[in-house]
Image (cartoon, rainbow, N blue to C red; front, top):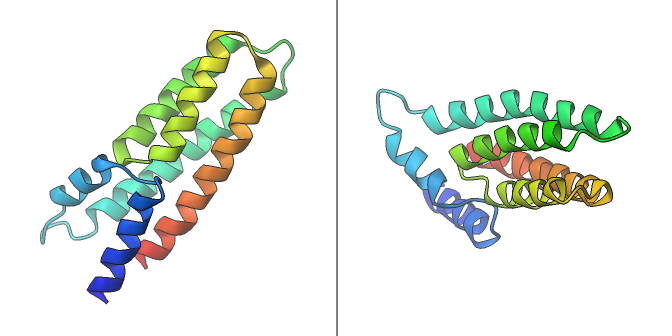
Length: 130
């Protein structure tokens, strides 16, 4: 069982879904708080869902408010960093670059990719924590 879990975690790193921050979170977990990482990830998904929804709504407005979009994405990127969500964080960076140059289509494409990575990571982490 432990070996399966270790292999699953390693594949999340190998596939680029997680980075070193996830390991640092695990190092904070102890007998007094055995579900620490799972609780932090649960909080991440609860809080980030609101940001994703805000971004979704902001992308439907015309004209696009790039500074508001960038602000939302900055918050989301920070949340991703806190749990080590590498692929999602990378997509946040790409999205912010599109905001910086005022590329609405780029923002929309990037956001679709971000949502895909976000959902994939969520599924993989749900399996990991079971």
